Length: 318
Image 1 (cartoon, rainbow, N blue to C red):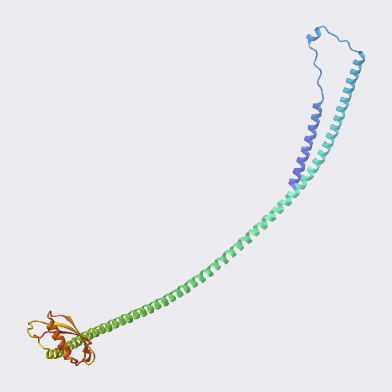
Image 2: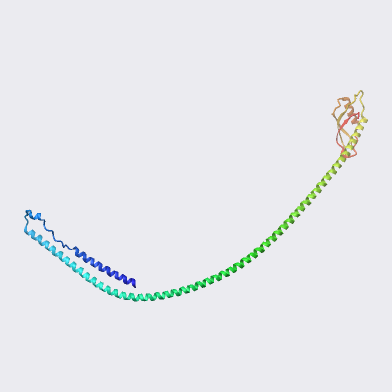
């Protein structure tokens, strides 16, 4: 209520100022000036009158007086109107002063009521503050209790997690050890297998070498026997050809030749050709005739030595 009363007072004061201003403006707008006197110099000079019509002068004077009267009436009416407005403003001012007194009393009453209300509000605020403090303390205690419970749970969880991780670590280590043992066993078995394979390979290589050595010995023996048998076979053929060879008369010594003899199974000679001549035609012809006479040629004791084509070197001096 206090702001409303102050606003009313300010409105009344501003209204009074406006009316006083209007009154002053009206008063000062009136023409109170007196026409200045004529200069002395102009009075002393001779007047040059102009002939004018007296009727026109009278009309002009009458018009000026009528204008002056009308102007004074207008000013009088304006003054009355302003006075009326001033009296009305004064009346309103007194009414507003009365209202102001009533408002002051009302404001005093409301001030007391407001003070009582503020006191009650302060009491309620104090009680609310105490209640909020108790609530805050209660919340803090509850928060502390929850924090302690959460801390215990977190501690237990961490302990269980630590146990779980330890168990998993032990399990992992056991699995790793088992894997390492298995890997070691696998490597050992692989090494053993490789060693066994190397041993078997070495034994196989030794057996192969022994076999190859024995084979070489056998081959050498077989080759020796074959050579002996071939030498014997060749010697038998040479002996039979020699028995059928007739030495031409006057034949010089130191002659020999090589014949290519083709035979069929059974020793029958089918063709003879001089492969390497001795240089003596009679000697070559006599050897060729001896081979034909010696047919069928002797067969080897080993059938594998039989060849359809024989290269026979004949040297009567051997």
